[in-house]
Amino acid sequence: MSLRALAAIALLAVSLCSCRRETLDELASRVPREIDGWRAEGEDRRFDRETLFKYIDGGAELYLAYRFREVLVREYRREGEAPVVLDIYDMGTPEDAFGVFTAEREMGEGIGVGMDSEYSEGLLRFWKGRFFVSIFTSEPTDEAERFVKELGRIVSEAIREAGSPPDLLSLLPREGLIERSIRYFHKHTILNHFYYLAEGNILGLDMDVEAVLARYEVEGGRPYLLIVRYPDEPRARSAYDRFLKAYMPESRDGVVQTEDGLWAAAVLKGRVIAIALDAPSRSCGVSLSAGVVRGL
Image (cartoon, rainbow, N blue to C red; front, side, top):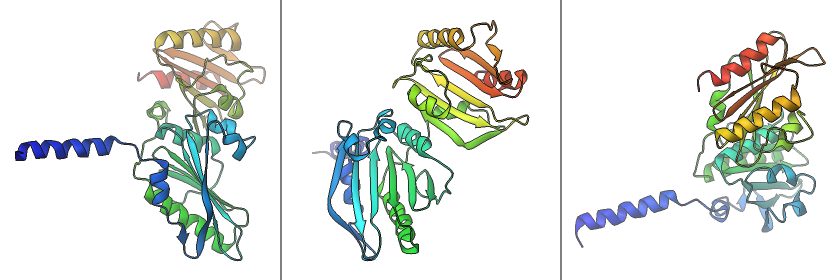
């Protein structure tokens, strides 16, 4: 066989290897079962979209609103310490790993693991690649806290793909943006959890639709900005018309003052809808929403 043929085969092998997604089993195998006196107890448990309710009854809906595939659960124990539970969620895509992280995020501090992280009172959460990771102890002693953070670093290093936040975030105006308020999602149930818009799904949100909600500090107020991107322009137009009819039926220009004296403004361009909510003034609402689509 010629050198050229061998080189071609090697290049193909590298290409196939780089395209193959690492499995949850492969990732788990790179995380030691014994670390600094902490030992994994029993076999790892697995839950998928059909069985997740058995593990987190009452909390499964959040993950099922994203492209969740399965979760691996491992429990570490050390004498004299409460268990430390490691959950590694395969969220299907880096965008959805980022999304569920933003949906879970509260006000903890980042500790520099994964692509973004949060730690508070024995609970560490982060995302990297298509994985969302949660590590928790119910009794955060000094030793348990140290191990939770060390385990987080080990798991983060074991995840070989990095991933990037959704490109939809690039449409958010930067001035006044509260970074930790950003939420990325697909379903209207997630939207209503962070901002109750309507009982019905008036924006037609679904798994093939991307949405981001963020809060701002401008003009002495704290308005929200909602950006929704649809697969095509007809879907966007239909959703925009339905929103105007349901949310501001008397408005002729997509701007309305609500009962609490605040303002809402909506604009459509192509397959993107931008909606400012709870704006302190008409001009603020118009500026926020229009700023999204100006560069499209």
